[in-house]
Image 1: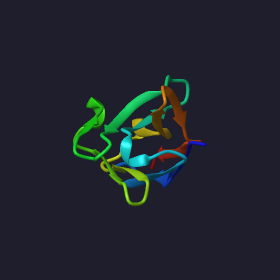
Image 2 (image 1 turned 90 degrees about the vertical axis):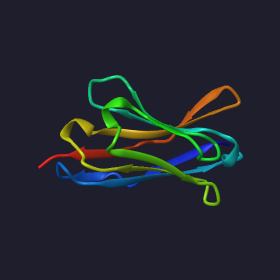
Image 3 (image 1 turned 60 degrees about the horizontal axis):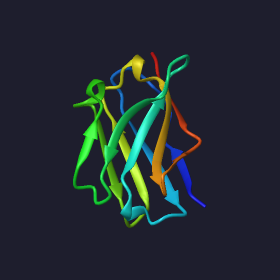
Image 4 (image 1 turned 180 degrees about the vertical axis):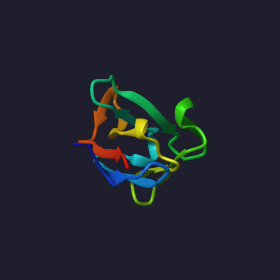
Length: 116
């Protein structure tokens, strides 16, 4: 079955950096686009970034452009989210996502807290 396991979250000061990872299994990872989303307390889940199956193209949400980078390693079945210049408003649970056979799959999420 499809499994997505996020890691790398934590508490970081404003201006700091974190690198999130999402390990995938249960499907042919290299054939699928991957996405990151986030959900802050009391808010709807928000799309963060997308990377194509080969990693040749990426797209980042407007509020995160220039600070976040999505990448993947198809030899490790892992997608990454590098987050720099973090702001308090980036505080959220971050989820990776794949749409496999017309169904959305989510990991359990990893908490990112940006606070001094």
